[in-house]
Image 1 (cartoon, rainbow, N blue to C red):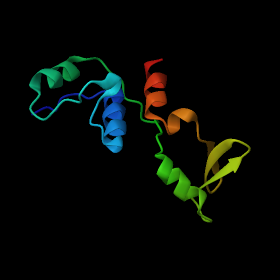
Image 2: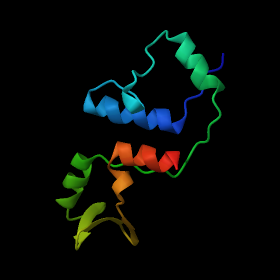
Image 3: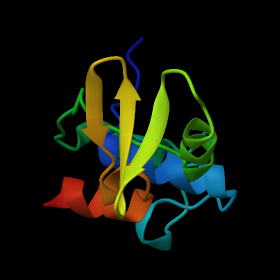
Length: 108
């Protein structure tokens, strides 16, 4: 039995709105409910790509990581925030913490 394909855009839309408690997909449409075979079929037939290097941080986690003194930590340099894990340092970009910005970036 095969599972319906889900695009990463749908995944982030559902995950972001699910975390916010809204239960809406991108653009304000309802995410498919269990048993919504028509929407599941649309998703399954839509071409898509999977980005295996996509990053999304929730602001609450970043705030907790700023308070840490051992890795992983988040630190600031000017107005920018960075994640540090040992020798690995990466700037946290706007689309790393904003579902809307992440979706817009994926659409581009």
